[in-house]
Length: 377
Ligand SMILES: [Zn+2]
Image (cartoon, rainbow, N blue to C red):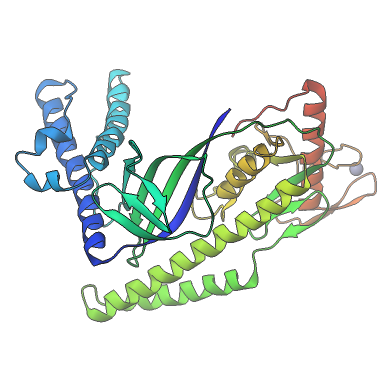
């Protein structure tokens, strides 16, 4: 069975290489915007789909010839996906369909993707060879095995002028399905990430909270700086650095937690958060406030599957918090503020712990019935 995996490393280009990376990112964005503009114009004139390629722009804009052509090809592919979505919706007769957005230097990520063809991307002596750029120093904290094939790489520059490379590899693996003996349920918690069915809660470490407080403080300072001034720019970098630091800390924590769980259990049961939100009419802001839960479940899933284990996702809403895990009675009057409650059967429940037990039991029941758990991630 073929599987994919991505590794992300810090890249240390020299000045010339950094310039070229930046130019490639700029060209990839430029060609995207040119092609999009022409597509839109063509659509407005004829109501038809324009098929254009980066090559068509190289005579007019000679600088496009200097950068990795596969970076431009990937830009085109991204645009084709976005544009065909737009076109499909128009054809379906949907009203007020918006054109795909232009890529702005301010808002969009600074990155480009290129593909490995005939070993033109390879790692040698802590350096990675990139098309047009040459051998760039790599800080490699994890080894990529020899039989793992590099498919593509994405080179990115952060707001604090650091460079990273994400390497997508493909490898062959034989996974033996593991018997399900040890099962655990996790209940999502905004503050603590999760509470499990053994009443353990994974709390974000203290240094993580401190960094978050620091970020809030520095952001406040930033909001008072005058745009365009030197102090503004200095503060912008300071805020961006804390941001990056927090992102890394969070990711690191999520890796450790998921690693620990995936090694200790054969099946992990969770609720689909969207279902939960719908059930409780909670408005989770998508990216900010899940506090890494989405990333965490992605890590869990692949770390379990690598070992022939499984992540069981409950994809329908059931009253995990309101149901007593002992007698099955549902406490309809339970509100979000109630952290603890007593069931008619006499059992006292911690809200999250009780929910985690119900989630675990639901998983065991379902898998026991069908033999194979249904997944929906
Ligand atoms: Zn009860």
